[in-house]
Image (cartoon, rainbow, N blue to C red; front, side, top):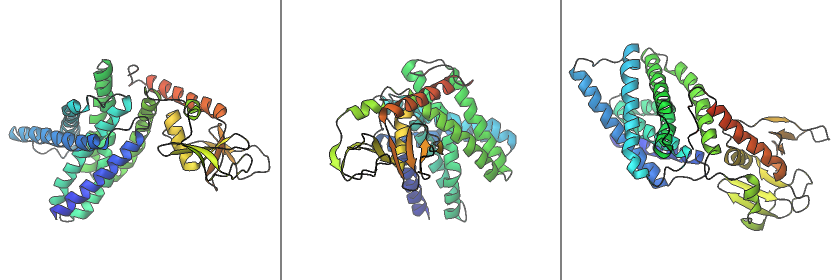
Length: 352
């Protein structure tokens, strides 16, 4: 049974690394480095945790399946281990950790590696190994990432900008409290309940941190600057323009999963709905849900306005905008993300 568990964990790890890589919108990290950090950082973290647990067991602290054990032992030990796992990988990241999002993504990779190895140990000792592995991949693995990712931003800030240690202490306290609370409730049969709460709280914090990181990235460019460059192709089969109905061939700009066409009839730019979501993430640093409002009454009940910068049709999965109108909306989003993060009590100053 060990080989199928190893294969399943490895495939899940590659999938999650791919999802994490998608969140790094400006300068994506190399696949080989992400996978290497997942393996090396995870192994280092697991090794540190095992050594500490054996030392604690030798002095009579062996049973940690209690509220006190979770908060005072498991949380601190495993979060210190993951932090040391990232620090051990820093020599590998000398040329790669060059924007705030990188610290978050690499810390998430270490947490992922730690969780996958931990999942393996749990699964091989269980009767229903496959079921337990699936359950832990759905619950424990994202939880480990949500516990630890703020420490990655703190490591980046400290290493690249010499920031004060306040952010690191705050990130570490958050990690051990979130981890300890999770285990304390899980030990008492409330894992699903706390998972939902942690997913909501950690997800909101993750979105806020990633929005901040994307907004202050040195690689960020404006939508207008991007569209001022040469199109990727002079023309391709056209999307229907919601403003004038033109369906003819159009010039296209591509950037990752973003695909934008320019209407030759009215001059607006058009995209698919999915592309619009990635456009807001890349140029506006927006990781939340887009706000939709009904379009002004003009006989088109199927149209809506998305974030006040463009019109869209959810049924047709299309959007249309003018760059001069949408760019200020995106810039305001980025500024808001920076102000919200730097104004938070846990954030002691800019990291760039």
